[in-house]
Amino acid sequence: MKQRLLCFLLAAMPLLYGCIFTDQSLNDPTVTVGPRPIYDDVPVMTGLKFLDTSIYIDTPQYRACELRYVGAVQPLTAVYFYKQQMPAKGWRYVTLVSAGGTHTIDFKKNNEKCTVTVGSKGEDTAVTIKITNDSSTNPPGETKGR
Image (cartoon, rainbow, N blue to C red; front, top):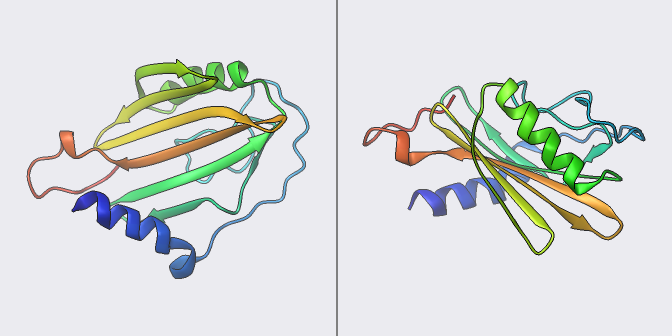
């Protein structure tokens, strides 16, 4: 039930709140934090461009998002960036799974789970960052995020 509600809310998000679109010219694929992340605790690698197909919900009690980026960066450089930078923002590294050119990195922070997926999109690299409430760490009935 929670997954269906989350899917509905994520799908309805552009209609309810709109999307933030930042048109930035980021041509430097170095391993540094890029400007203007959506959330302070989720870094954006320089060289990635925010896609307007991203969706997110942010309330004082809860957040859920699927942030999508694409850019001319090396996939393994992006993996290294997120493995290093997410813990610096308070996220605890959980796992890294690589298969078929796609790399999935899981992190946890308080009552939240963050999954960073890095893969190819044509000649570019696609990075998707999903944050959801981690129900495995919540007491029954508790849905508070951050």
